[in-house]
Length: 247
Image (cartoon, rainbow, N blue to C red):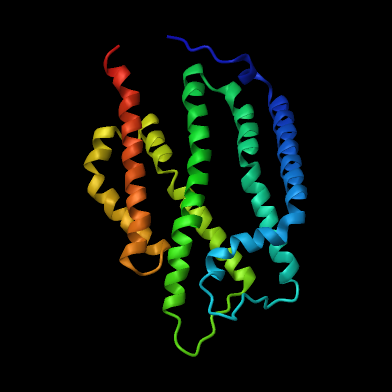
């Protein structure tokens, strides 16, 4: 049986490089335009992003800048990161436009929903962290601050901390897509993954213990959604393979 490949996949290497360069330039232009639109709002953006911590600061306390350039560079860095996150759908669209011509028709039908799902799940993970995990986490940190110690967090260190958590939760919410890909490429089947459920559950709680404060409640808030997302991935894989079992 022969599979027809899109003629675009047979382009010479130089054409592929030109296409790649064109799409990289588009990506840089999109990020630059979004950054230019967001930069005037860099200070309000930082005020918004720091609200989960500031609400738990003691009365009269505030965040601090320990570096001379932090009051400018930290909001600048935040605006750049926000520009990257906001432009991500367009960036992935450019990546899809570059890769799609080399895929078979069946692969394109599966890859596009996976791409859209990945974007939505990553944003969902960030929203989960901001609206649920951050208030709980910073409330815990504020409650265990020793007497006589002033809680005044550096704005730059705070930004680095929450961006790392945004990335961690965004990637954690990619579990359904990762599960689907593992089955799709043949690394494991659905039955094997179902038998591995106890190990997956333990792994979710280990990840929750690493990424959240040292209390059972916050660890569970991350571990349980990860487990649920793993089950969602298994359901999607099962639905995909049902038609194959009954031609």
